[in-house]
Length: 59
Image 1: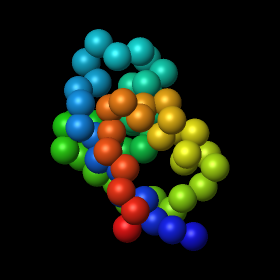
Image 2: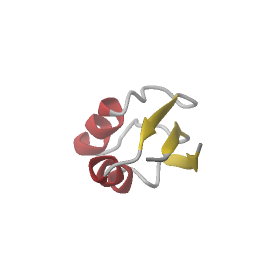
Image 3: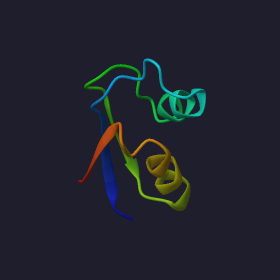
């Protein structure tokens, strides 16, 4: 499986609670935080929910 680097680029202030919880489940708290995770269907679903707040790169 491929690894994916997810970086939080926009603030979570004023966002829907679902989006804030999704970011927290990925380990993203502040702008600039990033995480590297293995690609999976569940991860793709989380990325879809907050795609407008993050940058996704293949590692």
